[in-house]
Image 1 (cartoon, rainbow, N blue to C red):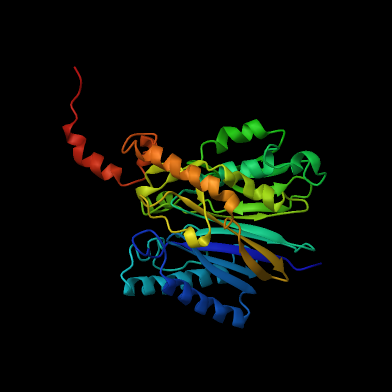
Image 2: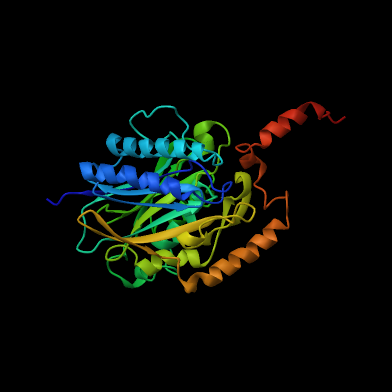
Length: 367
């Protein structure tokens, strides 16, 4: 039996340059040095280091499976070293996503975001890795639904025998720490009941119904729920396998041509459009935004990462970016009013409760 390859994407905000807008090249350089050592030792097969906004992104292949203590420990060591680099440079929010002083065997629940999947390589194994900044874990709900369940987006659901049976969605309730599965198309409406509320319900993974083959996986870590306070947005990552029994590359990218509204942006307290950009343009600065998404494409060959191709570095997404700017203009005119500002039930996970507590004694009962 062919050996499974594991693809791990682990990210963390460990220091912004300047402010929250981007990442200093020294952090990426330090990451590469450490991962090169791990590759020489045989801990990992291959790696790629990049960023989206102020988030450091570690993309690694290996044969040790998901949730592996060695791989997660390696990522934690990289983030710790880069935190020291960030402190030396006095970068903003150095070590922001590291919510613990010591690694405990698994990086989940410690601050960084994680998306991992294991699979036996196909004859051709194209994958797309999406990385977002200034938004929350539920940002992938709408794109993943359109990719795997919407025939108006994915023609293969109608005309390809390999996709026609549909897919199975794993949805996590991030507040109650539970999960549920839905089969599409037959349970599409039930699925939408939950994933239409992305602040609480997030698509964790998608599988083929026929043989339960992993198709997509995302990070669902909510930083505010882990820390018990606002420490920054989740800035999630997502891996999607493409072609053959999965949607084509173009079908996977298509949802991002119509930017949807996500929560995050300035101080994690506002709604804004998710703008698809190249890595070169993934440096959000206007009101610390608008939120950005980067898409990198790889062919995986015997565990090697062949690539990346910067998938949104394409003029066909120019109109999406233009529309994002128009939406950003309109929402910014609302200032501190909803729907630009998040609803009150979501603001409790920001810094606003500190202001409200200070004013609590000034409320008077009505006669």
